Image 1: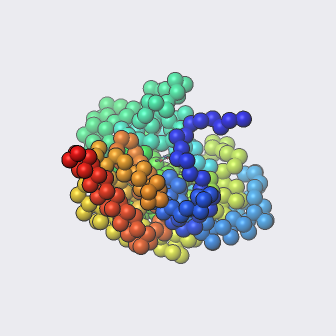
Image 2: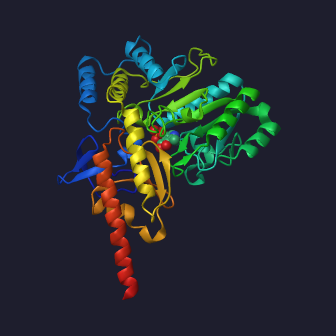
Image 3: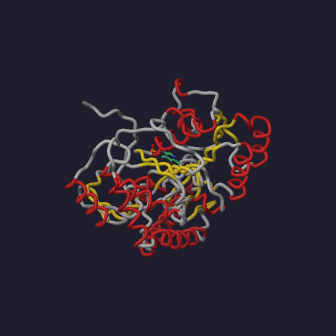
Length: 388
Ligand SMILES: Cc1ncc(COP(=O)(O)O)c(C=O)c1O
């Protein structure tokens, strides 16, 4: 049987990993500034994470949600404390799309409405509602198309206000990434998030903070929306939550009440996933990874801003993007194949940095040295070609 060929892949076979590094089958060592797509939060194969999963696996890996699973409550308590949202309620699932799908559905159960506001360049997942709320027609199948979702311009308060003036009583929820990831590292303005909060209050709509990529400490705060000083009604999370173990969830403000069978999942919140997620939070806490993300992120941003060839360096914590001009279009590929450094991208010309929150200043400097050297190489070889 062949694999269903949906991923354009690099011809690299990664076979082991430690911290911010991974190794291929020929024992070549790579610096991972991509974090396996923003998933590696506490570093690859963190020993505490490995041990907690191993110990749990030797006891029990899975049993259904029809019995008590005290690990779920332990996870909820720890998550409440670290995120500063102790009064919220936790529902566990398996992925980012599933988290957002449940958030949108729960909002509709809550206020009985159908309309959803999403924003230009948003990415919320590939399930039916989340893909419809994703601003990329190429991945929306005909069956996913719906009139229930409207896209408004990101960071435009006037348009949002006008839309609420017109349709406010029909709006079920507003979903927004605090920092757009796939869309190219675009930060939602604090005042825009505050505007969403006040309009949702006024019209009893649900504010959903998609924190799947920008959450879990990546921005230097637990949720990137925290920078705006407002609370969302539902936060979705996934990527960094399990450090590679598949686990997702939503946390839900207390005014949204649960009912039996309203939401559900077979695998969500299983023993093994909870052990992995608890290990992640324990390491974030014991190793102060949120402040590390802030410190190392600031260092990276400041240094990147000094590289005149790179444009619009932006981000928060260890979620950083910059535009690469046309003459440096080989940069990302060369960083990977010449310098053995993984980075992320966003179309058409953005390099995205999403490393482990445990990235050290020395590792950041290793990346900075390589990028400066490669920019010089590309420019000097293109000058040579032009002179010939
Ligand atoms: C902001 C955001 N939301 C949702 C998702 C979907 O997550 P998953 O791929 O785990 O379904 C992603 C994935 O990249 C994302 O970046």
